[in-house]
Length: 322
Ligand code: 48N
Image 1: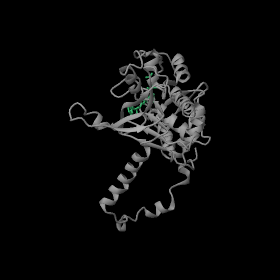
Image 2 (image 1 turned 120 degrees about the vertical axis):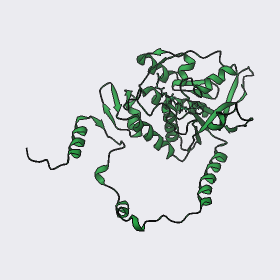
Image 3 (image 1 turned 45 degrees about the vertical axis):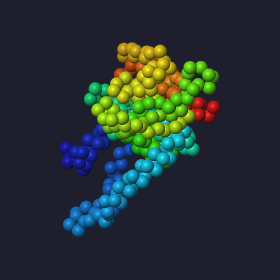
Image 4 (image 1 turned 135 degrees about the horizontal axis):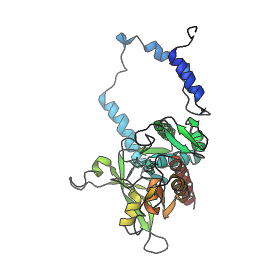
């Protein structure tokens, strides 16, 4: 057999591509064929005379702190807050940012790393499964996937999460404050004079501070005023299911609904269909919603997270535009 004109690696790549029905339409494509840019290749091999432009340490500090505190100042008044930058919160942020570039969107994430549970498919497996029609969202954002009929597979969950995250962070009307925890809700008396409340924003603290309220003197929080809050803080856990647990403790909800066992068929439809305004000004989506409704969990399939985020954005705009 004549020696192949292409390298084994190229052969592997060609075979892999051919075997996968990868939907690359408008997706983040593998553009290695174009090679590295000339300015970068010109730099390679020339390291002996290499040096960076001069800098003073205070310049770096000011470049960071000036922007951070200007953002905090700007976002102290926000149009829509999203609590939790997991797959649902990121999908909601993308949808809102795209639909309403005129609105100021603030995304608050307790972890240093946003993404929640969407960095892996299930257990420690890489691939992420989404049932159709969630492929519509993947095409919208530009995430390549393999089409398997009734479902699609993103080859690595991090490809979904990093692509949506990149799109959201590139939007100039969306600001993410990560390593920042929502540790309470701002409320106003309900307009109907009942014992109810309207949510009017969130109370935040740096997550490291929130983790040490018990062993440090009281460290008061910061606030963000907003007429609409979307909460997508995931399963009940140390920080999770935050807003629904807070509604119970402030007696706006009787009790949590007790999430039921895993049933993919029931769970995903329910989460998307029931993403809604729970109390005036607060929309809940994603797995946090299962903690109120007692819906089934769906396990390692993420279509409901993406489309619950889309629905949460739609609900938020309905409330905002009232
Ligand atoms: O990924 P999660 O936990 O939540 P969702 O709803 O975006 O996605 C859920 C999904 O990952 C699943 O659990 C899958 C589908 N499995 C289902 C099943 O059956 O088990 O993201 C929530 C994000 C995280 O990044 C948290 O760090 C963050 O919210 N967060 C908060 N951020 C700010 N303030 C808080 N109080 C807070 N609590 C959680």
